[in-house]
Figure 1 (cartoon, rainbow, N blue to C red):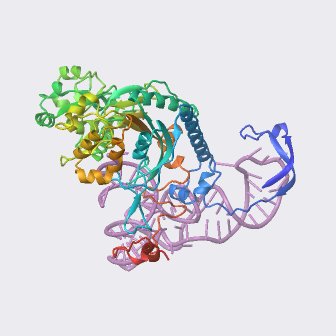
Figure 2: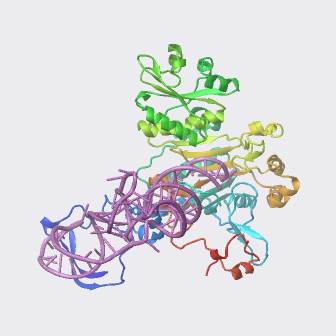
Figure 3: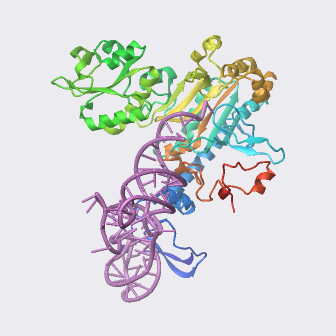
Length: 522
RNA sequence: GGGGCUGUAGCUCAGCUGGUUAGAGUGCCGGUCUGUCACACCGGAGGUCGCGGGUUCGAGUCCCGUCAGCCCCGCCA
C-alpha cells in the first residue's frame, strides 16, 4: 500500500507501548494499492506462541518465510559481517581475489560437484571444494596477502551444520608463522563479533594441542565453556576385577572416565539412554558407578573400593562415567557422554564464550586398511622436528595446523603450507599416489612450487557456521537466504531436475538405462 | 548406503486395542459492530488422512513398498 497523510500523535489512552509505531498514526488522505497479494500459503505475521510451519513448507515458500523478522535480522547481520570482514582485511593490506568456480576435479577429499563440458565431450570441470590451491598459486604469483569470501561446494551427505554449497572467509599470506595468522584472525573475530550483542571475545585465545584436546576432552573441538575433563584411571582400575576393564587393558587399552559432581541425581533411565547415545556414536558402551554413603550402585559398584573412589576423586553423591579400550574408542565415547551430561544436568558454564586454538594436528590419519589419508588436506607443512619421521612413521608427523573453535563449534581450519616441492611430493606419495598420478593431478601445483614460492600459510573460516552460532540459529538454513534440504534439493525453485535427451546429447552425455524415462523432464 | 522421527482442512495439531457422518484452534469466505492494535460476536465453505499395494466384513489406524522433510551413523582432505 501507499499511504499519504499527516503523522499525528495517538490519543493518550490509545497509545500502544508494545508497538514500535504505537505512539503515532497516519491521518490518511490518499490510499493506493500497489500490488495485490493472495492469502499466503504460510503465515508471515504470526503471534509469538504460534508454531512455525513445517520446515518443508517454509523452504517451498521461502520468499514468504524470509519476510519473517528473525530471518531478516539474520541476513542483515550476515551482510554486516561480510562487509566488516572486507573492510578489516583491506585495512590489513589483504587483496580480495576471485578464483575460478569451474575448476579441476581433485582426487582427494570430498566428492566434487561435476560440470560436463559442451566443447570437450567426455571432459568435466569440478566446482571448487575450496579455493585452496588457487590461493597458494596467488602466493607464488606475488600477492602476499590474499583473502576472499568464497563459495565452496562439496557433494557429500548433509547435516544440520552442513550445506552442499557454503561460504568461507579464505585467507592466505606469505612469509607468515601460525602466530601471525592467529593474531589476524583474533582481530578479525573481534571486529565481526562486535556486531552481535550476545557474543564476547577476549584475545589472545587459549591454545591447546590436538593431543591434549583428545586426552582431556576426547575431541578435537572441545567446548571449553565447561570444565568437565577426562581422566586416566588405568592404574586405579586395571586390577579392580571387572572383566570388561581388565580385558580392555590386557589388549593395550586404557581406562578413562569423567567424574560428575553430584551426578547421582541422574536417573537410571537417563544412563540407559546415554548408553544408547554413545553406541549410536560408534562406541561399544559406557560403564558407570555412583558413590553413595552406603557404598555404590551401578555396573562397576561391585568392583569399587574406598581407595579407588578416593583415587578417582569421588565423594558420595558423585557419578563416574567409565570407558575402556583404545584411545579412539574411549575418546569418542567420553566426548559424547560429556556433551550429553552437560545438556542434561544444565551444568553451569565456567564462561559463556570459549575461544580456542587447537594446534599440532597429525597430518595423516590411518584408515582401517592401513592406508594413510590427509587429516585436513595434503598441503600442510610438517612441524620442523617431525619432518624426519615422514618416511618411517608418517602417522606421528604433526602438521603446522591450527583450528579455530568457539564453544565446541569448528569455525575454521588453517595451516602453513608446503612450499618445498619435494616435501609436497613425499606427502602425496604417503597418501598412496604414484609419480604419474601426482604429475597429472597436481603437476601444475608442483611446477609452481618449483618456480620459487615464498613460504606461506592461511586459514579458511566458515561464514555460515559463524553467523549461525553468533545469532544462535539451530540450523545453517536459518542464515542462508536460499538453502538446500538435507537431500540437497532446492524446494523453492525445484532443483535438481532431469533433462531432456537433446540437452544431454549436446553435452556428450547419454542416459543410463537404469534411469527410467519417466524421470525425463517433459 | 544404514538407522530414527514425522507426513490428517490453507497453517499448527488431536484422532485410543481397526468400527457409523474424521475433529479443535487459527486462517479463509459472508455478515454484525466500528478507536482498533491476537478486536469481539453470528454464520459458512474447506479433507486423495503423502503416494502405491496388501491383510480384513471394514484401514487415518495393521503389514509391505515408495516419496518428501528433519535428526543421526557412514561420508564430509
